[in-house]
Length: 289
Image (cartoon, rainbow, N blue to C red):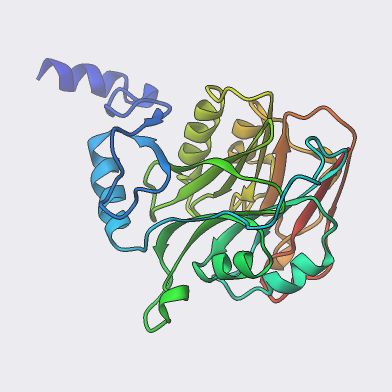
């Protein structure tokens, strides 16, 4: 009874909830489900989150990691320019093959709403890839389109692939992370409900613990109210948002949902591409010098 009175008195300060203000994401002692064993897993340890996230893991396919076959001995160890593109490919409907054809090398693609079939395309182009599904992609679809999640596709080697389960809001959301040279890259797709702020804050706190000289984060943050949302500022406080990418819409109704963040202080050129490549989102393309 005493605790109820105290909590009532301080309800506005959040006493009524036992959930911490920012959910901690830590390395999991084991994969969240039996088939998710090819990557390192991070996520929340709170019982409510874990039960929902682990159940969701059982409903999708296994992560897929692709290594290219070509001899890399002639590639420069540290390219002077790297092209980074963040793109939501609309439940796998976008024409990734055509987008790749427009990109100068080396490049790193951070893809949201990717499907398992993109790893077949990566093999066909002799590229590296890491795909981690988040959720089913609708009924009646063939196996290579049956779930969707986040992926990194790169012309440069991807090392240490990892999955980062975000706190549960309305759907299971799993970011994917890998190392490219001395740079840690993260692809993320936040929930389209107001609770996405909790996901952004948890990811930002996790990124503070990442030990890498350079970090790049790209993704669809579902910011229906634009870059002024706390969802954006939470990540911006840890890995700066690339202002050179501007504020042009990346989605219909004039919405800006897609962003790139980086700790790299070098000069950058960034644009929202005019072509959607068959998706409902425009890619955001960054050149780092």
